[in-house]
Length: 373
Image 1 (cartoon, rainbow, N blue to C red):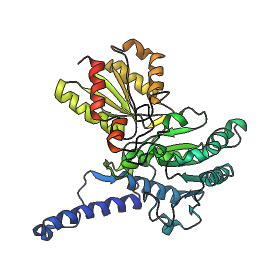
Image 2 (image 1 turned 180 degrees about the vertical axis):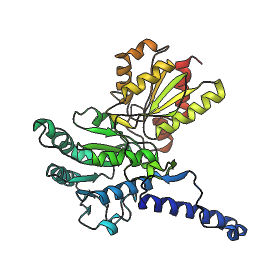
Image 3 (image 1 turned 180 degrees about the horizontal axis):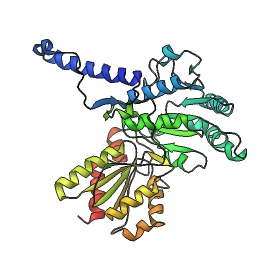
Image 4 (image 1 turned 90 degrees about the vertical axis):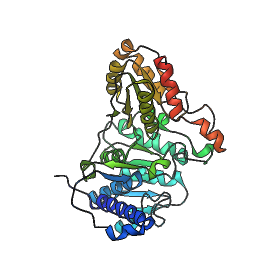
């Protein structure tokens, strides 16, 4: 039997009761029919926000060396309410508010990690981590190698990455390729609630520095979660992609919220053309699951990469190079197609912002091109 987290169960039950009573309010006649939840088993659902909140709480509860530090993480419950309730539960020693000084508190958390603690360093957005990049790369990422393997740095850098909605060019960049190019860093980019729980736990428990790239728009997304994923010891290993949808005709590979566009495109391709698309959720940017991608391409013979980052030197570019250098190249029936964000600082105007990033139709267009449809 799985060992269930009280935090995860509480989050699930609260969400379920809220939804049921909201439905009853819209239909007063149904109030009398309400019953408490039965013991029957069924799929459980959880928002990404609750998945992260419960995972952080469980890791704080599991290991006294773990602490959370960042702007507004304590008294305000987090800018996006990811850390709600954690200050009341764990106190000021474990959940620490900071001034608006990314360079300062990143240096503090890296130093704490080098001293043997296991900090979670939260950025309100990874765009602000540019103030901290010397600490992340020159101190956290390189010290283990430069010390001859004697000085680990167990730290998790987390926060929203990439574009949200109407936040302008300075708050919309995707850093997957930036950090993915650095030796010594592990970089993950989750999609579902299970991804967020399992990858976050793996990040905190890994002795190396991990960059945990979240998505602000995804925080309210709801996913079904398995009983296994509600276990306090549910950990997803780095470097292992997930096949979200099996197919035989074309491979669509993506990460974070763009996986959703791929799944929608795959459904439409089958409906319109009878094409069975395989959708791969990378989950891990570094290490990248090259064998998993190769295996899929050898089966389908076609590949489209999808990401919201800039086109030059991106995650899709790296996948293209890896395919060219592997045996998968001989199985391709058409050139690989990349779907990316536009080569432009993210516009503020909504109409232009919508044009700047991939959507389902753009994935469809790329797929039709590769398949010659």
